[in-house]
Amino acid sequence: MVIKYSKKSLKFLSRLDNRAVTRIRTAVSGLCEVPPRGDIKNMQGCSVGRMRLRVGNWRVIYRVDGRALLVLDIGNRGDIYK
Image (tube, rainbow, N blue to C red; front, side, top):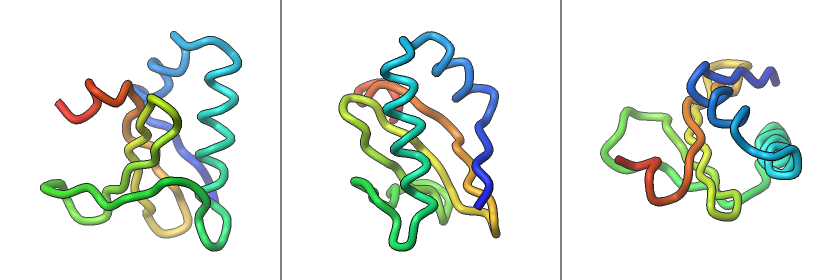
């Protein structure tokens, strides 16, 4: 499965330290396993297929589109849902 990051998520990752980026990228790569690894939930009130992954105090919003995993947004847990 191919992992694609949006421009917004890459911008957020560029502001973090290397240790945090490694932690988030490892968690995102765990989504490609069968069954997916991590604290995953469907998002309510959003378009069908949007999911969230919890990585410590960060949240990764993503969706699976065919053979690609699209990371739509990454942010702090309090700010990501606004």
